[in-house]
Each structure stands twice: as C-alpha cells, then as structure tokens.
Image (cartoon, rainbow, N blue to C red; front, side, top):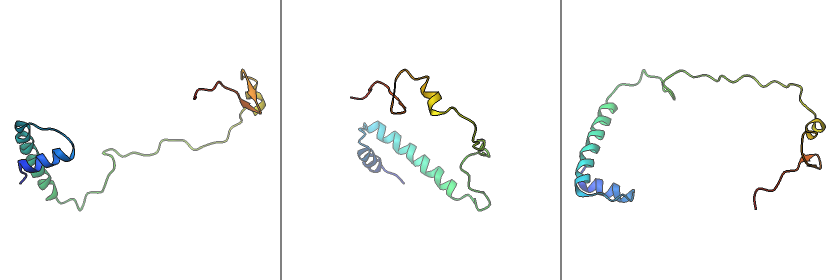
Length: 94
C-alpha cells in the first residue's frame, strides 16, 4: 500500500532526514495507520450526531449587567500621574 519511496517523499516534504532503518519502521507504522483508517471508513455513522466535544458543553457565562461604577474623576484620584483625563505611565516601548 505505502512504499519506502512514499515515506522518503513525505519526509522530504517535511524536511526530515531519515535513516534507512527509520524509513522501514515508519513504512510499517503508516501502513498500520492507513489500514485502521480503512476500517473506520467502513463504519456506518449515519445515526451518529456530529460532535465537537465528547461531553455535552454549554455556555456557563452569566448575562452582562450594568452596575454602578466609579467616575473618571474618582479613578484618576488613585493615579500617581495623569494628563488630559488619562493615566500617565512610563514609556515601555522604544
């Protein structure tokens, strides 16, 4: 089904250097994988719903609620330095 030449070609595409014994080993592994995929393709999954996760998930976030907050003036009282209604901080990117 898959040959050493195929494995060497795939390794070349991936820019992976393989020794000859590795090529032989990977050829057997890939043949096993492809054989298993063939078995999976024969399964009847028409009654199986598509899933994105094995467990049922739901959104656990709460709804956004508008709550009272501090005004801009109150917040700026906590700043070390301010300018034009904003926090003034040291420059970190040159």
